[in-house]
Image (tube, rainbow, N blue to C red):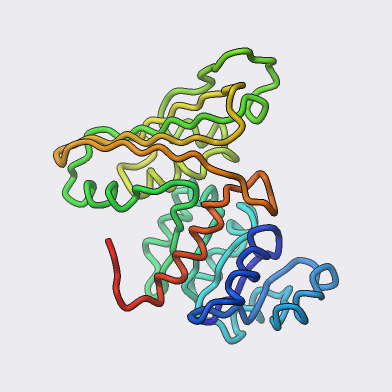
Length: 253
């Protein structure tokens, strides 16, 4: 599969390094804002750099893999999905219901949303298939300094409510609530609890889901990506692994 990569930051370069050793995948084109800044990538990874989105989409690629930011997705998504399948890590852009609806209504191309820093989404989607989810709750615990300026000595719940309200109040901290809501019962019916905890140094996510199928609970303790401590290693890995699975003859789940 020939990949057109958007972005050459920490996740973009993580993908370039790992895909270089893949037998199934190859990055042929990279969309960047500044060619001079990333000129070295052409020689190191044998890719062609683009700053024009239309020329980028015309290049020899099968899928666009976005590893940039919410603003870039908002700017280019509608153009991309008309031309190519797309995988996006900037899940926050799809808190915009209109943008998500554009993806749902796309005639011939698909939007792939990697699971990011969590798992268990296959179970959530299975339970949703026949309306078998009664409740879906995400509790996210983060280092206190990343959520508040208060000098906390013990944990503090700084938000409890719907995913919809959480996304509006903390748009840069809610990627996981968005992907969970899309997989499950929507932002209005998904509950989110956000905890600032001075005793932890990693992000911890707990998902609880219950319904006609039974109940399940998942906990994820995420190590940061070495190249960028603000990004979870699992989020970067989920992009690479999802791409690999697209080329598999055996589909699990």
